[in-house]
Image (cartoon, rainbow, N blue to C red; front, side, top):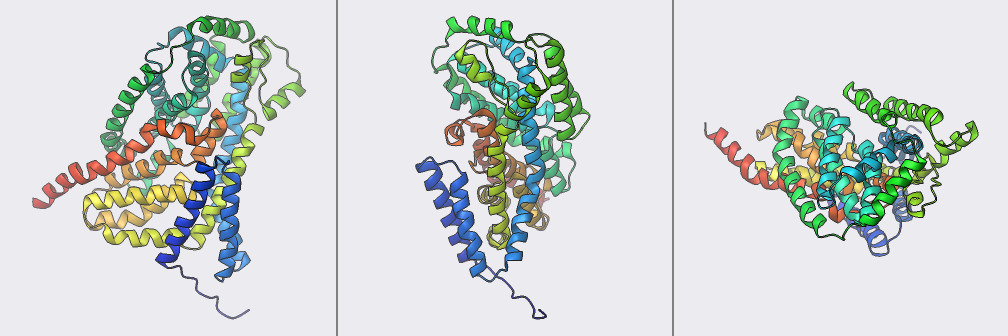
Length: 465
């Protein structure tokens, strides 16, 4: 055909109707009726698919939108599958049981929740990955918390808050480097600026966990020693079991990408399993474990439930949901819904406070629309970069705002990549832990408050010179 393709345009009203309709449908089905996100997202995706055809898009254009939407999720999906392998091998080798064993010995019951928040923060800063922190140390802390009598939602909330706080303050983090790269500033300047909002959010979270944690159920002290004995009897509790953790930390500091880091740590754990495990593993059993996860047979039902997890199959549910969510996001971008909404927001950004608030709103909105933290950082950053220069406002405020509204908030979205991952790795409904993931929603609020106060004061002071 030589005829020129029809120009597709989406109005602001049309974009708002699509946004409200989509979020209403997802919210009602997922939150009110407690459905898993897969089918609600598939339903919305189906409606959008045929809506695009009705609006004049060709099937090739629609398919291109889906493909472009899925592309950013390919590497995360592979990482998810490898984390499933990592978890299975870390349990079989005794790595996670060793962490749990010494956790039982050292962790104070009264300060357990704030302690795991701080530990996950330190680990997150060290390895530069919230996903790695959650899927490894998070599982160990979840097991300890369960034995001590703490609710799963509260324990997971503290783990998630610490992991994402550490991720946002780590020079090794991919999202930290992405935010600073989009803003065009040095990563350490970004972290220094990020601390101005992240540390108050961390302090508020720490106080919250201290208060809520101390008022939780009394710990089951009678069963703790029994659980420790079960771990010692059935797993290799030793220094050797910690080697996969050390390898992961070393690779993180050497800035080795996630995929080779996870593979190396997994196979080191597999090597330890073969030579030090108290159980005999054939090649077939090992391969089955890597695929379907480790199955604990300790004679203790509670411990079996806690330590029977991992394997690539455990992450397939999450991978399917990510593909659906990103496909949905790809259609929204293809139909220009996201572009129109962000473009119309720009007209309100004539002060530092408003600019920072709208950047947060934009990044948060994209998280809920698309479910992908990388796209929320990239799209918001590229859209508002010129507005920061025009005002003018230092781009360090842009980079930290992108991290607050882009990276941290993604953990709060049940159909987002992070929310899906957390649900799969820790076996918890995102709706349950979200109220306790305080850092993820306090950080954006503090960023906005500081934007209207401290940043505005600095801006006016500089303008007066």
